[in-house]
Image (cartoon, rainbow, N blue to C red; front, side):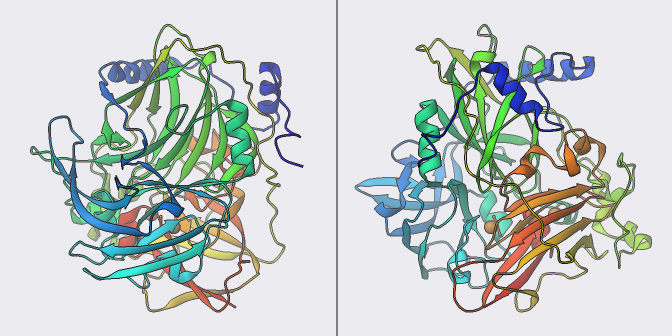
Length: 555
Ligand code: C2O
Ligand code: CU
Ligand code: CU
């Protein structure tokens, strides 16, 4: 029986009760506070000047949509595009030719079960390798950087796309080069589709690139010539590089036009270090919208929310019903203000009750001598209220589709009974971020797990720390519990401290300072022999500064 035939629909009353059944999930906020109204009005004002049409995935060129069956080679090249109007920006890109058409950073498309057979050809002067972020493939095809492709050389990938339908992504993973290469353009999307996905598109009449729009959020800094600037100081190499300009699909100050209907956004935070607090705003208030999927695909049912964080590496699948909006003015996709908690310097972080014990091996006395001390200086405005994109509402054909009640057969997460493995996040006072006190050594497997084991990992972030979006290669996981959250997170949480996003399948979980996050991981996979992967912070500078470990899945 297909998902489509047993799917039910609900009206607006039903949607509200579905949302109400999830504790802590907010409906729209008509009574937003005065300060919030003022902030949102400021964001909307900023967006009125946005005049660049959003780059959309077309049939060729930058972000062109390309089925994985239709190409056999991808070249890592230096290229040039126009990001700021009238300026040429040198970039690094994935270049593909297929059917007489040229693609840069193609948005790859696959059916679940398809085979990927592709040769990576490195035409730049640095080692590189493609990592397929979120896919569960064997170690060699994972592209985790344990082997890399030197300049002028190539590497063949061959694997089956077994993962749930979702929007995955691909980017470089040669340790020592990851932040620079990703920042200069090496990153794009990989869509895996299955029956649930096709049913959803059919029910809501969605078309990729039109009413279903991928949004790649990135922050960049440019010099006067329009060249990307990446020159982190010691403090930024430790804390993370945050650019002052916000780009969506490599478009600055973008806008789109949308009909009064349900529109789907597939959102990737492809920034090196910046998190966003996303909301759709109009007329001084936040609109309600539906979270329908996360890193690893569709939720069981849509959750009504009115804001959500997204950290580097993460993806969100959302549905916005623009029939709920006032047709007389645009809607703005915003990042609302928040405390980014770069609190190494020692100011108050607004905590609830700290549940995490102090970090073992963290030398408070020495912090003043580390780059961490410089983190209290402004970090290029992460956490500032900013407009990301304006959505102009246009008249459209009558649209009467309703929000589905069922999206997938995803079951509730359960935790194995065995005691958790602890993952303590901290730093060593010498400019390195650490996991369990260790700094990344690619030659040493810091831990091993048994293939087929079900484990609980308890990820504990230090009190005085930064948020860490912790990403696991090889396997996705479920979040079981979130304790010790800062106020700004706890306000959005429901039972067991879980955020709406925590209801989904994740490959990257954001762990705020002072938090203990319990996740359940099923280490079952079909790959014979020992397989080595990595586990790391997806703030790319943190991973480069040591916050990564190699682990082995024992056959
Ligand atoms: Cu998207 Cu190891 O990373
Ligand atoms: Cu990954
Ligand atoms: Cu980190």
